[in-house]
Length: 124
Image (cartoon, rainbow, N blue to C red):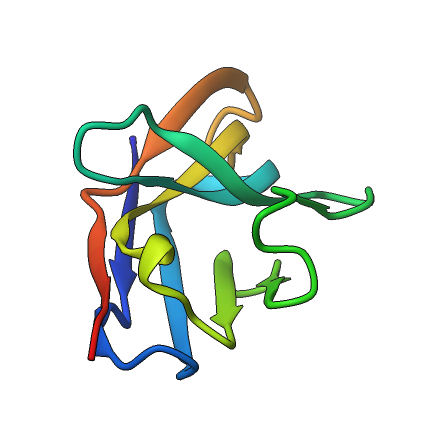
């Protein structure tokens, strides 16, 4: 069982910055991909950024140059630094982990794991 807990959301003015954090806990030996998704009111959930283990980061076009994803494999954490925030960035941000190897059995679980989300509101 893998649990993901996000933190760092809140209210920020346009042009401001926020840093989201996500901690993965459970019997984890390795996580293939960690990332962030978001869902704005009335819209579908969309990928914001992803960080494959040993691979290249990927960003949505709408956040390139403003957001930076990073991860700490030793701590099973992923971060999202969000700069130059815009009102259209307002959404619930979800942490995602895909492809987890159990530290107990070394079984590979290819499913997606999700956090409960943290609300980011960009408004003056």
